[in-house]
Length: 110
Image 1 (cartoon, rainbow, N blue to C red):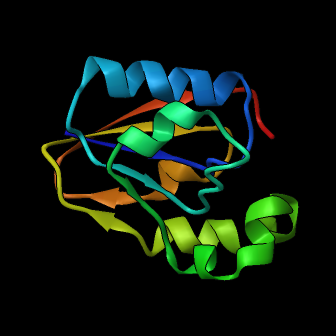
Image 2: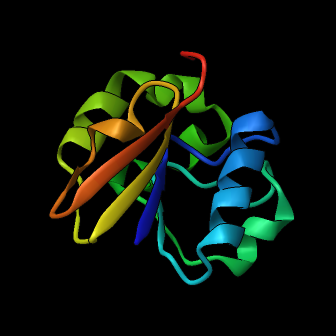
Image 3: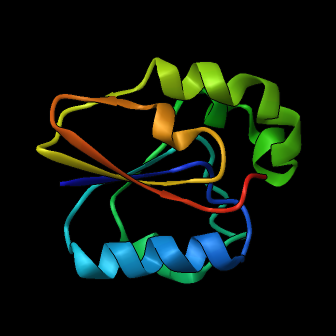
């Protein structure tokens, strides 16, 4: 089991959903494009969060909208080894590839 979410840069409803998913599947790795620990809920700090190369550009964490043109490519190149991949997506995370089954929770598009 693994989780994937578009980006963790704010405190919103989608992030609350991801926290509920992580609580339901403790220990499942959480994959995302960008992670701003100061910008999102502090509970994420206790989770195994894996970011992508785009996260290395620090300014994009605080201004995630600048990263939007790169997210489709970021997730289409992401392969997650898991029996089940639970995607929390408003536009990109569901594009991640997996070796197992994929379940998508689609939020209203961004």
